[in-house]
Image (tube, rainbow, N blue to C red; front, side, top):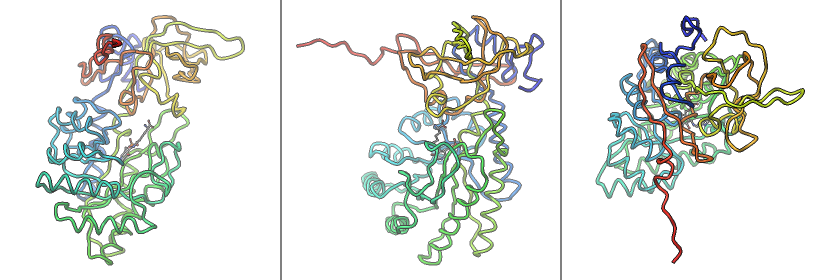
Amino acid sequence: IASSQVSPEGHLLIGGVDSVSLAKKYGTPLIVYDVGQIRQQIRKFKQVFEEEKTSYAVSYASKAFATIAMYQVAAEEGAYTDVVSAGELYTALKASFPMERVSFHGNNKSRAELEMAVKNHVGKIIIDNFYEIKLLKEVLQENDSHIKVMLRLTPGISAHTHEYDQTGQIDSKFGFDLNSGQAAKALQEVLAEPRMDMVGIHAHIGSQIFELNGFEMAAQKLMQVASSWREKYGYTAKIINVGGGFGIKYVSSDHPLKPEAFVKAIVETIKQEAAKNDYPLPEIDIEPGRSIVGPAGYNLYQVGSRKDVPGLKPYVTVDGGMGDNIRPALYQAEYETVLANNLKAREEEHVRIAGKYCESGDLLSADAFLPKTKPGDILAMLDTGAYGYSMASNYNRNPRPAVVFAENGHAQVVVKRESLEDLVRLDQSYQED
Ligand code: LLP
């Protein structure tokens, strides 16, 4: 926590707004974003490309946090975005996100999803598999349309991250395999289809990655593929998309590079490879999700019950949990937590922060070093902005929290808290005949 984020009375400030008053006003659990920080990160990514004088697209991977307000901010900052479902695309449409800046991803896009993408003229479809080529071809014919496409390749690179977060290894459900000739065959099929404009190639090696090496290898691999396709088939990929996955710092033992440093290294690798192979410098696209919204998000909870277990860390229970942030339960993800209503208090005990859900695995933190807390205190978990709200559920029929955007001392609700009525909105009663 920066000193500028501590109010005179020791409260946590988010976007210049007192988090404790936000918790009072809007209730807890509450998700708050520092919008300025989101903007800053997009700008830093863009700045790398501007300095490197390359054409580019910073495409926000909206699966990390997809709401109308977020698409609006991304659009305002000149970002592109990628969507992976009709639902994300619909939200982007509702936000009036410019459709030509949207790419559509996914390893099993339905015909209905492809149709929606085609009818709304999204910028690019990132094709994942042969079935999709066939489906898209049919949809384009039926709608008498054209669309830009890219091919997603499996580069054969295992990123050092949680195994659920790896996507680039050979044995992956995503993309066309390079070694077996699948990718070259997909290229032929797409080039033969006049309704598809094949603009480039894509790879994404995983998420929450700290090593530069994997990204450099992926960039190199994509350039090698592009050069060999140019030689063999006379096809020149104009866009190289290296995906996202830039790791962020969650806890003090994490030491990632700055997200923009990854990008600089990727751009330099691509420039070198292009020079080496006499390849025209392509447009370079990136798809960061976590690094744009993760550090900007805070989950606010109110402390309730406590259980002391002799000889072990006490359980301090909060009013949220795995329904609003499943990452600790699902990936053993760790976060830092602070006492938002008294940042000046001295930490004095190691506790476990438990959620309110009916599962022993619903622990938000296995080890938080906090001042002594009492019921009614407000805890803030830090860096929760990516894959928190977007993976939220109604488990135990708990309503999902509200989301607030805070910037320059002003706060605004951008997603309302679900009500109990919302929870039964789709339910129908049952009568036996
Ligand atoms: N591009 C593609 C094709 C992706 O599949 C992903 C993430 C991204 C970009 C963005 O990656 P990022 O920059 O956010 O790391 N739920 C997991 C993360 C799943 C990531 C899925 N794909 C988690 O909470 O750690």
